[in-house]
Structures are given as C-alpha cells and as structure tokens.
Length: 335
Image 1 (cartoon, rainbow, N blue to C red):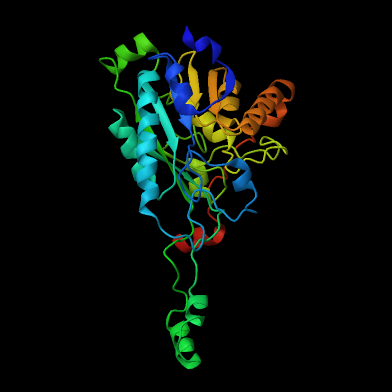
Image 2 (image 1 turned 45 degrees about the vertical axis):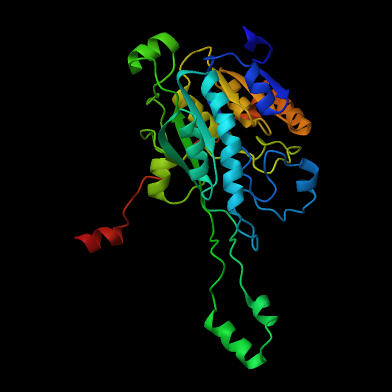
C-alpha cells in the first residue's frame, strides 16, 4: 500500500503536494483545523512573521481595526475546494470529514466541502466563554475630524458604546461532512467499516452525544448536557507555542464518534502541534499528520513520544457535573 510510508507518522510537506500521494478510498476520518485566511493566516503564512507580532493578531476572529476584505473568503474557498477534492478522493465511502472554522468564514468552508462532492451532514459547535472582545471604538477618528471640540464631544456622546461590528466570539463551528456511502449505511459499514456514528459515546452527565460541546464549566444545565473533560494543564506541553492548540478531549470525542475499524486511519492535513494524532494514538487508531512547518512537526513528534513515556500527561480530567438541586427556599416558593 502506498500509505504504509505515511501511517503513524508526521510528515513535513505542503498538503496539496502530499495528499495526491495517498491511496484512493483508504482514510476513515479526516479531522483538521486549517488556516482561515484571516490576518495573514492563509495557506502561505509564515510562522516567524506571525510569531513576531506580539499577539497582535487574534486567531479565529478579526482583530480590532482590521479592514474587512471580501477577497479573504473567496481565496479561502478556492484553495479549500482543492483540499476538499483530494480529501474526497482518499476517504473511504462513508468516511467522515470534520473541519474547524471561524464563524465568519464557515459558509465558505462548508461550500467548498459541499462542492467537492461531500454531503454536509451537520455542524458541530464548540462553545466557550473565554475570548477577547474585538469591537473598536471611533473616538480616535472623531478626534481627527476637522471640526470644533464642542461638536466632537457631542458626536462622542451620541455614539457612546457604538463600535465596529465585531462582537465577542464565543463559539467555533465545525463542518461535519460525509463521503456518499456505498449503497446503504449497513452495507457500507460491513464493507468499509465506516459510515455510522457510535452513540455509545457519552457527553456531559452520561448524555447522548450532541453536536454542541464545551470544555468550560458554564452552568449546571449546559454542563450536564454538553461538557467534555477539561484539558489538563500539561497536555499541551510547555514547549508548545502553537497559536491554536485544540483540547485533546474534543478531538477524542469526534474520533470516538466516527472511527469504527480497529485499523482506522485518521488524517489531519494541517496537524499543527499534533493534537489529532495524539488523540488517535491514545484511542488505538492509526494517524497521518501533515504540516508545512518543520517546527510544528517536531512539536507533534515530541507530544506523541510523551504519550508513550508519560501517558498521565494526556489523561483527561474527570467530568464532574453537579446535579441540579433545589434549595429549600425555592421549594417553599413553589409550594
């Protein structure tokens, strides 16, 4: 098999150059977090250039003051259509494609995946509370206006609290697509060992799997229904300076839902710091990781090595979901 030289390895290469070398109909699941073409993070983004910005650039959302550019979405779509067409070719019939996105460009991503031949089966939502507000005020623009100070002050008072349309972003959408099955779902599972979801997987307080999840404890109801294990402080690795490391529990959740075969291969064409590969290996599945950045490849390989040497670093924190209890006062009020 052509895949033998790639299985359970992290390959430093351009994804569009490497994917054509992977065998047709050979991959069970693709799980990835691609560049979003926001703020220089396109398919040609340079690690050193971005790292030297002192966190000026905010991943997944527009930073304050950035000019809106419709060309970003168009370029992303054109590029991701090529990626999606290759992924369509290499996935087994019924194979799954999970792709993280930003709320602003999700429609471009989903359209590219759809146009490549996939069936868009669902959209998952990663819900979280910790993020920076992106909106920018206009006081500094008013200050530069060629008008008297009294008028400037009136304008400031009139527009108090009104800012650019960039609010706090608290979720990430994940496209969930499937390559069309070979006849029925049952036939596809028996023949290709992929194509259905494992509903034995639980979420929150032993709840049925959902297309919403969080690793942050938010409140009793949301925690009970959607909470996944919290990331441990050490699972990322102190040496890991990747800008958008995904929680291991999220990757595990998606892989457990979709990868049936004991020999399943999980591919991440933008492996970054290796979380998808770590999750696949931890679950006893095969993996293939690709990244154009040599530094990230080394980080991924180090994390995979640590999984063998220090498995406790990657042990998920137990989910603790408080059962809703009425206080005596509340019971008295109801009575």
